[in-house]
Image (cartoon, rainbow, N blue to C red; front, side, top):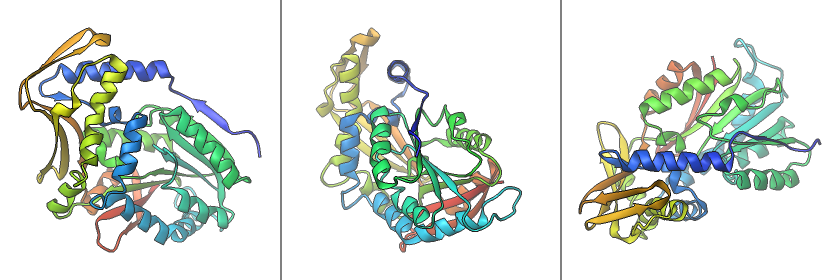
Length: 338
């Protein structure tokens, strides 16, 4: 096979500028807020990996169960129902797979394996802001799938969707892990419209999403007994200390996870346990925190399945298949570009 193609859409200097912008805007707002993406440096990624193994955090296990149980069915759907204008293509239509926020590309492997067994896997493209992760995945999968084309996109999938591969094969864009729920409503709608514009009729979008359930189950998943979620949440302060020379005292911020029934959303916050004055020399800022003041650090929307499918339709997708785990806690949705 040819050498992997690497599309670099985002450089370290741009990531640094985005972090500075996010920190300045968020910490000078009322209420203060920081985006979820700032949690994910190397330490944050490791903490999140540990979090997914906690007994209370069902999301990763449920999604893996769904994908493992239905990978062959997904491959069959892609082979037999793809094509433009609603026409089916012949069995054996090749598929190019892109995974948004791929990380180590662990979530998508069972689907890749199923496609590869049937001779349908044309190419795979991890899409991630972390250049090291993209390069490592390409190297590893080159050994696992020596006969397919590999490429990678280093970029922000909220900005750089126009760089998706366009090789005239059916494309499957996978967005797994429940990250879709980290968008607020307007952001989610814009992302779906942008993705629709970047795809052709007959292409596919597969998304994993957490579903509405007993609030006690939801809250436990974001407030595990071992305190891993709390440490992951506080990691955003470690990131600001490391990248901006800050002097946050992460141990003096309490992690909170709150359930908003009306918005079907988990809100994550950090609450100052005492009055503090925090300096961020790289920004020339000094930020005051009152005791009890909260920083909003992320959201995780939980979906009613039918409402999520309505959102897909509104953006120009046609939901075709839906799978969930036996407990109905998590869903994987497969939609075709209309």
